[in-house]
Image 1 (cartoon, rainbow, N blue to C red):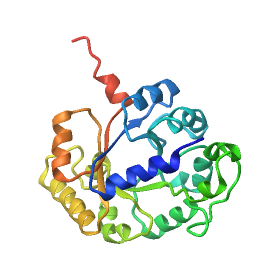
Image 2: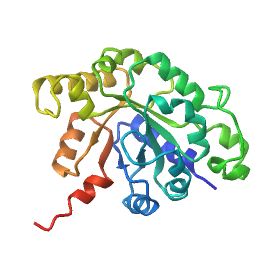
Image 3: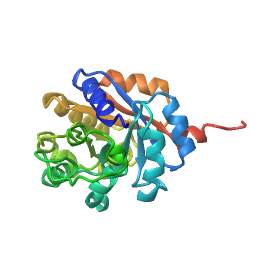
Image 4: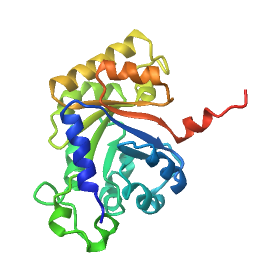
Amino acid sequence: MRNNLRKINEIREKLKKKQPSFGSWMQIPHPEIAKILTNNKFDWIVLDLEHGSGSIIDIGKLSFVIGDSKSAFIARISNENFKNVGRFLDLGVEGFILSKTEDPNELKVFIKKSNYTPHGDRGYGFSISNDYGVQNMSETLSFKPLIVAMIESVKGIKNLNKILKVKGIDAVFIGPYDLSLSLGIPGQFRNKKFIKNLSYILKMCKKNKIACGIHMVDPNKNDLKDNLKKGFTFIAYAMDTSFLKKIKLK
């Protein structure tokens, strides 16, 4: 029987207590890579369906690795995939990181589609997510997927206060590369303008009692310590491709 309810609630409990929750990122949708990442005891694994090579076809096979591990199975999706939220969930996805979140009303619609009645209008059917009906129906219906709004644009920052007030959001997550692009300073993470906006997002999250996260593209322990010190608690630590790039003969 799947343990998605317990896994997601454990992550929520950590974030509520301001304890760090660590995950990692998959761009290569292969079950063996998923197995290696879950063996590293990450709280969650993200399948990147925006920039990675995976698609909805890969979710089912990865679900039997990630979904049945101690790591939660999260998908990073962009706007064009929002309409498939119910399908993703049935295939075993347990949470979402929503790319380029800018519109609080759009976020509300997405959350409604993600949850069963009375909190939403997601349809019920036998699927991977409930072991094809083996899982108790009341437990299935009580499940609420993790919802993380990705802030990576000037418009997203402008609407941040409204986004943070949307009921059902679990965390905000910063995409540093696209955010720096939107600010007109691509890749300049030490630029005062970038640092100022990072601090503002952290401040607003703290004010609204919502966890704030960030994607660390490269596995650097010093940067990890620095991000923890800044107050980030939902941290994606590197990804399969960056781990592989670290392998060099010279």
